[in-house]
Length: 106
Image 1 (cartoon, rainbow, N blue to C red):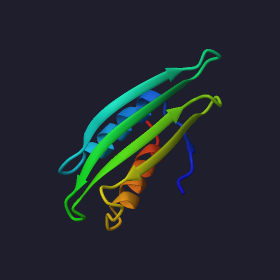
Image 2 (cartoon, rainbow, N blue to C red):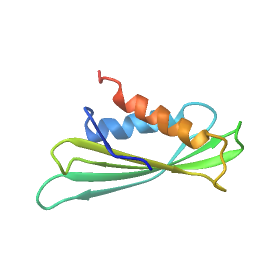
Image 3 (tube, rainbow, N blue to C red):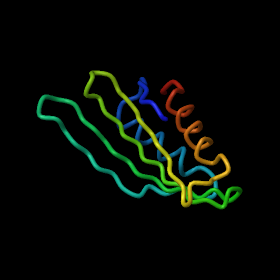
Image 4 (cartoon, rainbow, N blue to C red):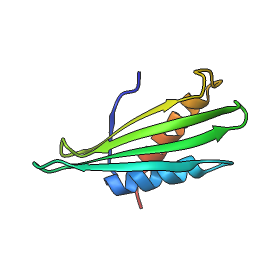
């Protein structure tokens, strides 16, 4: 089970980092973006990406939920595949994303 984690980047920087990370390699596409603003303050951004892993023959969907409702920038990501069997590609994509988000900003 994936757990949310906190990052030092702003929500917009997180969204840009995710897009760059997913688009590396042969294929990666931003599918959708949805934003919510809470009346008491804070934002939530939901991003959906699709990436094809040639070695696994699997098309994966990455869903990322970014929010700052707690006063810190929180990230939750999950990956799903076409048929549930992706030969480790889901774990690989989650690891790439987390490492990219944990790198210090500019």
